[in-house]
Figure: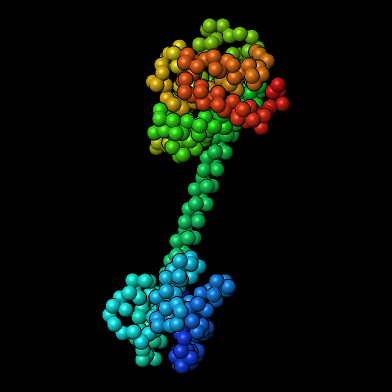
Length: 371
């Protein structure tokens, strides 16, 4: 598409000049080719732009006028996002190089001195209308492409999230008592992460991007349970030591399942890296007595420490085949009792401050079996 074709069929030129003779001369020159609007002062021009949505395609602006000068007017025009990209040509009797330099520095695209040459004025206007048309076309094209990229990115993110949720929901159907567990835990984790975002120990890790990644990854924390036999996963009584060893393997199974997904994908994905850490480390304990590796203190990934609090709180308040759900107050007391043994002390303190938020999340995503 050529610039010639892009120019509006009947462009609008706005002339600002306090001299009636000049307005008549320039208007008569332009009217065979363009729509023409005029203002007899800088003030009137600015009032017009403030009151009308439609904007001209180009402005011819005198400099020496009573009240606001042309220099004053262009400064105000450039402050207005609606009209700042309209090309301005100074049409003036001021012929000093310093004046032309100032006009161009203020944002004018051209500077024509009077007395004017009609052919020069028409040629300059045509050139700048073509330039503006090309710039508008490219800007619109870029905005369209940016909107399409944003749309596609949003769609991919939504598909990714739905896929994760579908997979984890499928896993949870084998454990019918857990209900909305995955939704609650991801909101618990996000609340904890937000609360700790400015804490010196966690700030370098908990960027806004990481918090969204944690939210997206959290549902995969128990994906390894798909590999646990029903006789153990759904057993209504206490597990034997041998059965508990098998149950504990869901952390390793989850990590391996995600690693397999990465291998099939052929590339590393940030949220899968975090999901892998969460799945593998959320049963580690601060004092080193957890599993599968017996990590201790800061050896435990931050994402695992956040999920540990979220997962245990939800397990406590939820009815399972082998127990009734505890009250919110009882669950809070148990979490706080585990400060410095089961849980990172600072994460526990954040939980203490957020306990009502946790309760609200639990109520918002409650199960029919919840007490």
